Length: 280
Image 1 (cartoon, rainbow, N blue to C red):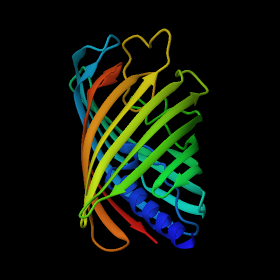
Image 2 (image 1 turned 135 degrees about the vertical axis):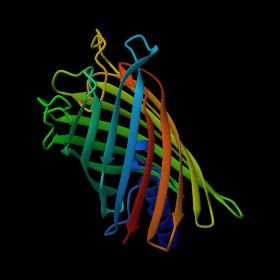
Image 3 (image 1 turned 90 degrees about the horizontal axis):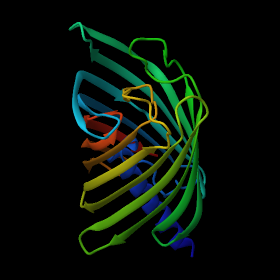
């Protein structure tokens, strides 16, 4: 039993690292595996996104002035126990947006941070079922700026996650499903989310496909106002791919790309990103 527990803990560490580092936490969402007690993960994903189209309040694709966002979200996770993981994600943004006058307005800074705990509820072999509770805490959202970095409010979120992996002779297949609800205490309406990823690890390479949807539970909608960085009520559906390469037992690098393929009151953005992450 002790050997099985060690095997599971190591498997959980590897898969969790691939998800957070290779796929980028912002892309793939939370993962069901908790970290082994006393172990840490640190990742630095950097994502660039751009859009010159958006989906209006009816979900139709329309032209809009171009905006660009560079996002850096360092992520630290620590295994408090084998069943409980603590996480911290500060968010740095650099934003540029075209104006109707033909100028460019920019803004940058540390906008907010996510603090969360993930608790394992059930596990068997390489399968895990967990819940995660998180808070989004504003740092310097600059709500009054022409290009705000976020909103000056606290959001609370709860997620339920199931993940599993299956070992083959030459490859390991894994997947995760995540359902969430975000309570937004001020003007923007609450949101529901559904995310999933599936991947395969071969030797030192890991390939991953991701999909996630956010649905704004708003009635009525916020007219034609669309989401840039301030996080108003919106619906967005994204899909992407990711690739990571393990340089050693505790260090890996990754890259990813994704696209907003449908939504309401949200920019039709394309995303590319790179990351590095380490275990100890």
